[in-house]
Image 1 (tube, rainbow, N blue to C red):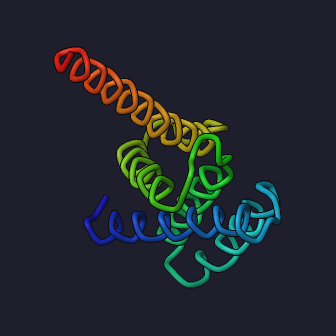
Image 2 (image 1 turned 45 degrees about the horizontal axis):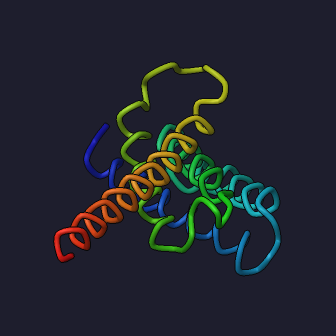
Length: 141
């Protein structure tokens, strides 16, 4: 994949996922509606705005991002965390773009991997900080 295309994938993925997250949580329209709106709009507009392959790739990236944007607040708390998950998603999308072509569920799987990676990183960080603080408290006594 060309560097410009990768940059475009990163941009639309982050914007699409954040917009889905916003529609879902801030506008209270729900995850399915938010994802469907973004997937529909990107699927209609991007293939017409860009050359066929690039337009379909960008529409697929937004669709995957919309799946990540469906995440509940118990997994992704805010826009900053969603941005981190979407950066993960962008990387996974670019790396696996040619893997398993035509296999169903690929976009949802990528979104799931990205959100679970964020959730796991948060859990590890929380555990590591808790252990560090508790060891520090013990040494002070």
